[in-house]
Image (tube, rainbow, N blue to C red):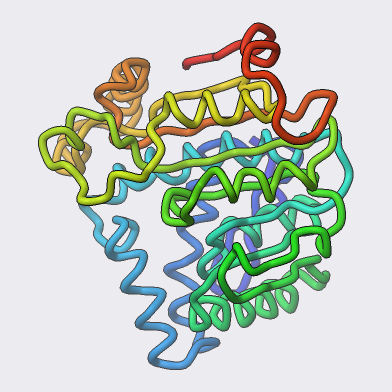
Length: 297
């Protein structure tokens, strides 16, 4: 695959944004290791970022194949869908954290609004943005907003070209109010991608969450359809536990996991993608549901 290349300093990998795929997205995430060595962040900020990526698996060698499937593959599909949105405006990243996904979307030419309640995470994000701008010799169109998402006036962002949330949407309650806020600013062609935990999976049933207000994949589907969002894809994120991923070649176990993900009951997470059709706001669930086409890969 043709790539933009590796930045000479610290071997930072920047995929060709015209043709990026899962392999190059994986290399993009591996940049985190190099970033943690360059001294851009304070010691406490460096620890914050290192601890986060250690917890989700990138910082542990034996969990990296699992992270690659769960994060890199999922976000690769999300980014391709978001950047291809026909509508004009901004991409809102809800729960943007330290900015790995937002920075990639901005590199793809999007105007990105990053929203998060964590001031420390956003300060790390700000420094990472400046660092990438310096290394690439170009500006990134990113605005950061700190605070409760329900206190933000989404109309200030202009029309929302797309919205994205990675393991954060279900934390923002009540979810139906958040979806209303988003769709009120979306126009025909605007897109929404949500990656979140699957509250109805086998694992969730064995180890139930204390929270009862999180949306299941079925509820996501219904609530999106009722707001004129035609769902084009709803897939499981990952099934097999991290321990198994180190025992077999990645392509083999990833292929098996993709097959298991077709059965949503097994998937511990899921990804849903939808596009706004004519009309904005809540519409008849039946009219949207009849025209939607769920693709499970």
